[in-house]
Amino acid sequence: MHLGHRRTRRPLWPRAVAALAALALALVGLTAQARAAAGVLVNETFSTQTIPPNFGFPTGAAVTNGVLNVTQGMSNYTTSVKTFDAAVAQQRTLDLTFDWKTAVAGSGAKTGIELRDSQGDLVFSLAATSTELRYGLTGPVSDSKAAPDPLNPKWTSTSYDRGKWYTVDLHLDFTLQRAQYTISTKETATKVMTSGTANITGKNLAKLVACNYYGTGVQSLDNFRLSVPANAANGRLKGKTMYAFGDSIVYGHKYARGFVNFTAERELMNLTKYAVNGATIGPVGGAGQIVTQVRGASAHAPDYVVFNGGTNDADLVYNHRYKIGAMAGGFDPATFDNSTYAGSLETTLSTMRSKWPSARIVYVAVHKLGSRDWNTQLALRSVTLQICHKWGVTVADLFNDTTLDTRIDSQRVAYTFNDLVNGYPGTGGTGTHPNIAGITKFYVPVLTGALLQA
Image 1: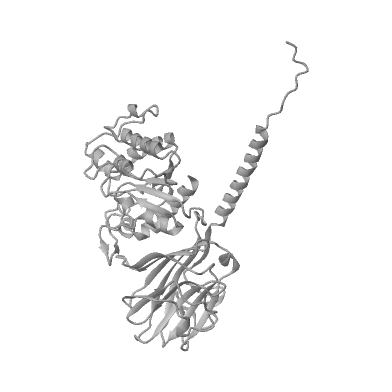
Image 2: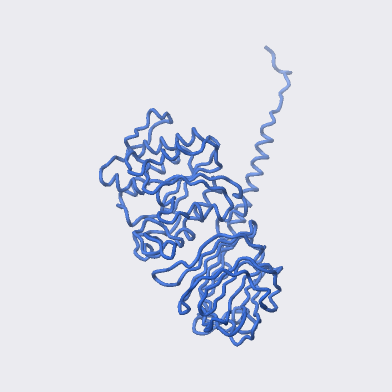
């Protein structure tokens, strides 16, 4: 057959590929910009005089003996304002931590600090009398020229020890207008005074206001660190649904507000948590298998399925209750050896995929545990990562991507808990269950990054 005059029709798909490639490059560029913007904006220890002097407070402030003192010699209802530069005010998401102490001496006296936006809306506030610690996230708009009673924030009060330093830890999201906060004592056996998440009216961070509401009382600030988080969702996870499965690390141990709760609160996600203390991936466990949680969950597909496993399995494998096993060659559930950890993990993932085909699955590889045999942890991790790769599961890798290692005793004490103190997780745990500091510093950023990646 003579084909010399046959007209060749050009396919359209190269144009589509080119367009997708351009879009991908643009998204990579945006991601690179977002990562480049992440980092520390302010990190002040006040070990020497600052530039500008006294951290930018025009009156009532002095850097002395390694701390910044404010509200010195100020009259009733007066303020002194530090203005943040444009690089701070332009950020949509910020992490802020600082240490604070007050010398206010009378129950009728009150001094404090306020974080406000460029329009005078409140972001966060902290104050004290001699008997009460107070904090607020809502209140009237103020130009911060004065601090009369009608312009005070709406305070929540708790008793406290005036002689102690306190650490304030804030995650500020101005896209969602949300603040997640923790106030705790600054000491080895840290005591959380309060922790929560709230809506705020503030739209950026523009001012730090030192307020002498009434009476006298010098306040001291130290270790003021303001940074842009590497994994800022900026509203992209708002309204997404998340089902969470696993053991006590996901559930929260004795504190039901675990790291998945903190993440969902921050990002305005809809969370349903099915995790149970003591659960396992493998075939033996008094609290049952994680696959049982999956089978009993809602049939309605979530946007994300988040789970962990292996912590309780490590003890059972170490004590020869079952073997780790190996990854199967294919995806046929009939070939999975459910008498082993590996086969049970593949059955769990197969069940998730079959039940919710559209869901993005994220496995949380927990931190390095001082409470489990090290070689068993490594062996379980190896087969788990192989299987997650096979099934296309995103890994939120606390083990590799953070410095949290509770084999180091100081980290075990600082970042894990066994029991509640004042209704919140304490410190000095066995090394297994992250407390609020461990959750906010390590778990939430890594899980947020994995959700965005997935």
